[in-house]
Amino acid sequence: MKTWIQALKIDEVPIMGSRVLYYKEEEIAIFKTKDGEIHAINNICPHKKGKLSEGLVHESMVTCPLHNWDIDLKNGEAKGENCNYSTIYETQLKDNYIYLKI
Image 1 (cartoon, rainbow, N blue to C red):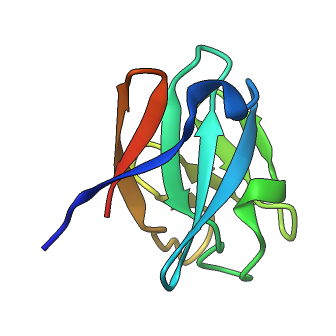
Image 2: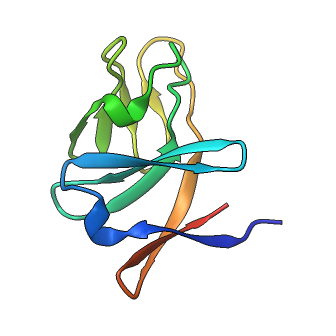
């Protein structure tokens, strides 16, 4: 059964940047886009296992630092040959905090 957890304060995640949250067995990258949208996704790229939190954020995408594949932060889809998906996490903003449904 999934539950909501308090992750980080909203202002802890820089615009066009990310922070990593470790929760049990999960390594989750939390991103903030230029428009201030918050997205949470498994931090490990489904292709070459790069750390997505170290990639470049643009629009609602992150570019993996290992092979330049773009990963859609909204649905986890990898844009490239043999596309795979990364796990995404539902987010909610409340009282200046980011909550994740895990």
